[in-house]
Length: 211
Image 1: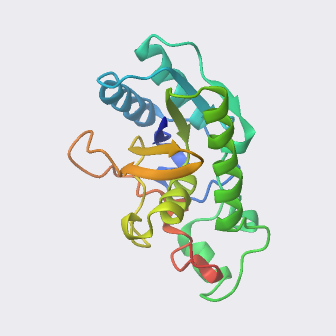
Image 2: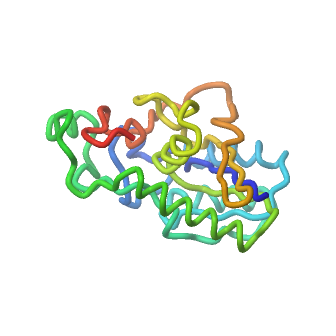
């Protein structure tokens, strides 16, 4: 059995502005770094063998903060853990997306949730083969975490419009090739962060492909 602790990166200025990030590489802000440190304080109480992270800088820095706090090597960065691509919606606010792409109209270039699950699931399986029996922190993104929770335990998935919190921790285990959920949104600080997580609102209506 391999354990995974999926951590959403800390806040960025685009999160605060409720602007869709996707693959756009926006760095953490000061609050986001604090959220990463809060996640690290929680994870310090668990057995953790290594940290890996999405190659986007907001997740990479989150992973680095956690690894340093846990006394572990810098995280290995992986392109297959990056955020869902949002195509032409990237850089827009939720309101702008609603205006340009009314409910039912697809967003050109947006990655399907099924594709997110496929690539991230393959990444986790690869990590489990390389590091059997370990407990691994994965610093990644809100839409990634939402897609994985929805895939393995739909009843536990946050409702549409409810964000995956910046800095939140979600537990998974991989046993005999089967991924399961062990915990959703560990309460690190007793409340929601102010950012709201624009991309995790699934473009409010998810405009065509119900995630």
